[in-house]
Structure formats: C-alpha cells, structure tokens
Length: 238
Image (cartoon, rainbow, N blue to C red; front, side, top):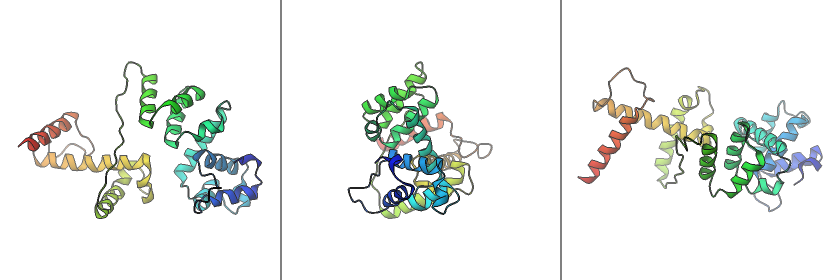
C-alpha cells in the first residue's frame, strides 16, 4: 500500500478497514500502520476526520492506544531515517525487532546495518543480545531476556490478570494507567516483576530470611533469589 498516494478520504477508509475481518486486501503490517498514523499526524488530517488529535483518532478508528501511537510514530521516523531500507525489508521484520533497532539507532547505530542484522537474527532475543554486545563488548549482556509460553486454566488466567491490574500502578509509576495496559508486552512483565517481588519478600519475611521492616517489597537481594532456588531444589529432591 502506497500511503502517500491515497487521498485523505481513501486513507481514512484504509485505516478503518484494518479493524474489519481479514479480507486478503487490507495491509495490516505495523510498518503500514506507522505510515498511516504519521501522515495523519503530519498533515493534521485528524481535524477533517472530526477529532482533536491524532491519538484520539487512532484510538477510535484504528484501535491503537496512546502508548502505541507514540511508538509507531517513532518507528515511522526510523523508516524515514533509512531511505535505503526498502519497504519489503521492513515488512519482514516483526514490530518487536523494529523496536530494538529503534533503540540502537537512537544510540548512534546505523539503520541499514541493524535492519540487516535484524533480518538475519532468528528471534528478537537473538537481536537484543547482538545489540547488547555492540553497545558494551566487555559485558555481553548483564540481563538475559527469555521468552516463555505457558498453558493455564481460564480461571488462573483471570486471577493473573487481576493481579497484574493491582500491580499496574507500581509497575508503570502511573496511578491512573488504563487496565488494558496489562496486555502490552512492555508492561506485563513489569507487572509480573512486582507481583513476584511482593510474594517472595513476603514469604522471606515470614521465614526470617529478611527483616520484617526496613525493606521495600520490590527490593529483592540477589542472594535471596539464590537461597530460594536452592531451597526449592532441596525440597524437590526429598
């Protein structure tokens, strides 16, 4: 889809069609969404669509929340910085890889170099490790990221989501954050971190492994994690 070639009316229709059932015609790739949002924002087309901001329009007609509008605009700017990267190259990249490329380019990396490495990397985690090595060769990666998929009963899923909603203000630092944010990839793991930290420190205090006061629930000493893991292994062996 050539976003620039569409009239404002055609652009709006194309955007609205992205919420409809798959037809095999509408292009739903993140790079196209980013281009659409950027044009609507740059040309203030949202005013003609009856909205006060691009964010309001995107939330209503594209189903994209305000956080993702900002992220997609950043990715659109990244594509503008790299005219030598063809649209088909961007199309082969999942948005998770594009976000990692954006991060390293903002630190001075070459867009073309990192798009090439992103295409070659089998996973986003592999690309993330390559970026970490490039940024700090002496420290290949201080924190290794992993991906985990699990199956669980629907009731457990509902309970987990309820816990994430309770953890959301602490995880994001925003007391009024919409509860739908718990499903965002960059937020849900932060919520899980808060939940786990509260549980581990609470049990550790009960067992006398930590003082009952004077330590925040989200402060988990590394040696405590090692101790808990060792206790788990001993229990499993009994």
